[in-house]
Amino acid sequence: MTAQSKPCVLVTGGAGYIGSHAVLALKDAGWPVAVIDNLTTGFRFAIPEGVPLYEGDIEDADLLARIFAEQGTAAIMHFAGSVVVPESVENPLKYYENNTAKSRALIAAAVKGGVQHFIFSSTAATYGIPDVAAVSENTPQRPINPYGWSKLMTEQMLADVAAAHPLNFGVLRYFNVAGADPQARTGQSTAGATHLIKVAIEAALGKRESVSVFGTDYATVDGTGVRDYIHVSDLAAAHVLTLEALIADPARSLTMNCGYGRGFSVNEVLDAVDRVTNRKLDRRIEGRRAGDPDSLISDSSRLKATLGWKPANADLDTIIAHALAWERKLTDLRGHA
Image 1 (cartoon, rainbow, N blue to C red):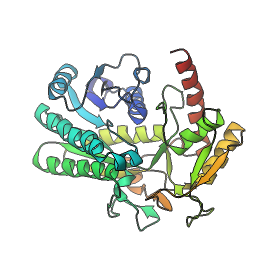
Image 2 (cartoon, rainbow, N blue to C red):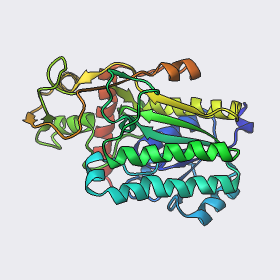
Image 3 (tube, rainbow, N blue to C red):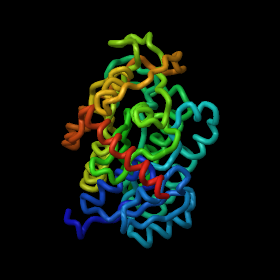
């Protein structure tokens, strides 16, 4: 497909962390892109020059119809939503509104507007606490919090809608997303973020006093929880490949895990941050958090086999170095704001 023949992709939440990396990946690959974002947690500076931004909500059917008409939208990448697991437990209705009800409105607008390809930002949280070490797409989905349920409900909606209408979909279930654009064009910018690598980088730069380690008695190599960390730019690349696959075969939908298939413990991650930043983090040992599994690692063989996905940044120190470079740039951005 030539650049001239590529249709426009609408990215929801394109001013946010993962969405902004998807915008860059699409733009770098020659796809016309537009963004809808209500800027509740997103940032205007995360959107590249020349990419149209529609400031508004994904449940606004009139706005979506206008975007589809103005941009000739043929596909949607849906990142907009709420993502903090503990908050979902405290405020479940917010998550069922933002992640499920608004996704339903977006899917309905896509069907009405004739948008035939839909890529959904899902999560390993749909698996809950799995019984296996490496989680495949066939592992039973048993969410243990409203965040996971809100995403799983949207997965089900997409499957049902695709069976009834001319729409195919890609569901990508993320494991632990980290890092930043290698060229430092965008990164994780949210204040008060809860992601371990983001928190540790902030602590290394003096923005936090310490890093909490929640639980040291897990059945892992050093007693701390093990997670599969994927570089955000590799994840964005998987979205572009998924888009190409959906357009190439409109009769096929895809559901795939996104991770590297290997895990690092909390202490191993913090050791790497110490190494990359040449600092010594203050680690505060705290009790386990409810619902945290000992280990959560992806089996991403389907993604690799189906799309030929080859991650370019599958190295923990690289992920941390890119996050560090972005955090330093973010300090400058905010200093000049």
